[in-house]
Image 1: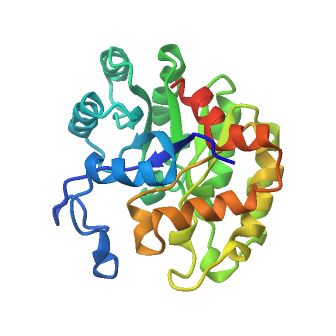
Image 2 (image 1 turned 180 degrees about the vertical axis):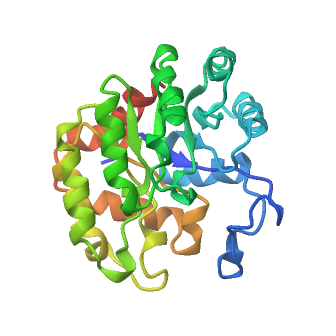
Length: 278
């Protein structure tokens, strides 16, 4: 089956040591620039129609960098940028960014926060509470220990569209599923929360993984969120430390190959279009 695909999660950057200090020497394959020209050829090879570009650095300057790229390359259908949700003038900031139609939502790197429950502080919640006024989405980037806080946040804001990035980065390399599974399944009560099928290969053994490695995790998120609230994302170029773009896509295609054509269209295209208003 040949169907058009929307990649709901990928990145662009101009590499330097200072802003990308999280790219360690064992990730040297991504210690370089990654720009749309390179991705465009990969997308043609894999029948990808368009993508959502997601923030990497926590600066508003990066929003402008992405907007400039999106103006040049039409396959960039949406942008998940960054804004200081804890700023006193958050309303003004959101009003400003709302004029750019390709900016669909925002993300904060909560996985690296010293305060693991930062998302539940009054000042952060104030920012989250302003997003829906401008129809902005929110990408939740966390580790498994923060799932309980993310659930509390989603329950607090039932009219805000949330999406969990990378399955909340379960510890796939260690096969540790029990607590993650329990905390993820709790999201069954939240109609406003989606989940990205992305970032899996980087959480596994980079040199030894297959579809069977990921099946227990895919089973949980598919059962929890249903086929209307999950979507494919490559996490390119970060995925390259562990797998090629084609291999990342093939893992997800193989898992969902027994699902109906309509379900596959939802997972690989329609859900991203609907969630991000592409």
